[in-house]
Length: 78
Image (cartoon, rainbow, N blue to C red):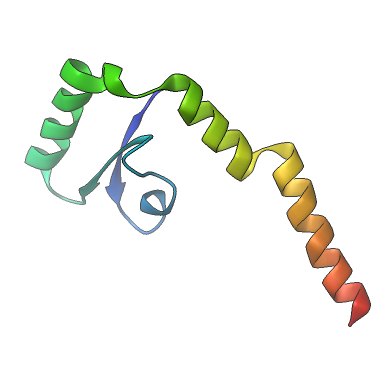
C-alpha cells in the first residue's frame, strides 16, 4: 500500500491521516502540487506495512463482518 494525496471534499479526509497520506484543500492547485512533490521526494518515510495494517483493521472483511453482526444483533434485540 502506498500513501495517498486527497482533497478535503467531504469524504477522503475522514480516512486519510498523517500516517497514510496527505489531505489538501479543494481548489488549491499549489497545495496539491506541493503534496504531490512531497510524496515524490519524501514519501519513502511512509510505511507500507503500517498503511496496510491500518486499512485491514478499519475496512477488512473481519471488521466489516463484526460491524454488520453488531447492527443485526441490535435490530433483532429491539
